[in-house]
Length: 183
Image (tube, rainbow, N blue to C red; front, side):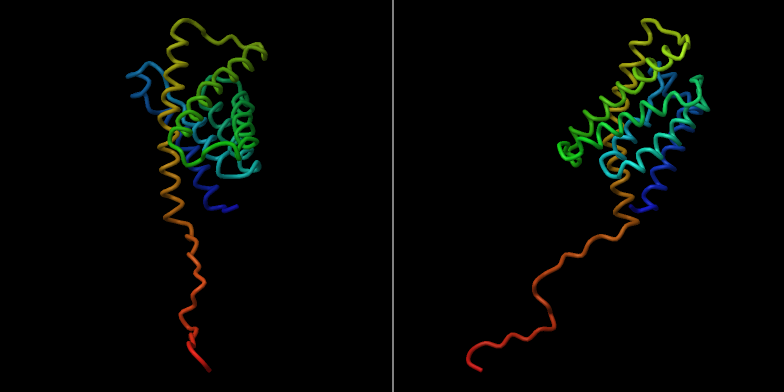
């Protein structure tokens, strides 16, 4: 586990939460706030282990709930559930396919608000629901689907910039001498 990579993921989560709380332009244009945390969880689940998934779910979920009207901690379990489900099926998923990233990001961005709503209703909360909620749910899913391949490209670029690249090893050593013929 590369702690520099983990710190970049956590920094991106804090920046995503800050951007969702402070930027009103996407909310005014499309009528819904696009959530980047499910897409970030998809990336984390496909590239890291369960410990990093738990750290991201806890820190990003609590910071998101602290800056929203959600009860504190209600977003942690849906984020961890997304990460855990993807981590369990990691061998079956195509990490490098943009289409797979798009589908996983859209599915995660559609499941996360529904799971959060389910938890809020079971905790006794009374969220505002109406026909506009369907549009917001669709816009969040579509925005998360589009944002997930962008996050993959961004973190792949970060990985290429800051991590050592494996050297291609050859069976040929330049310092060996090849003797041909008879002694």
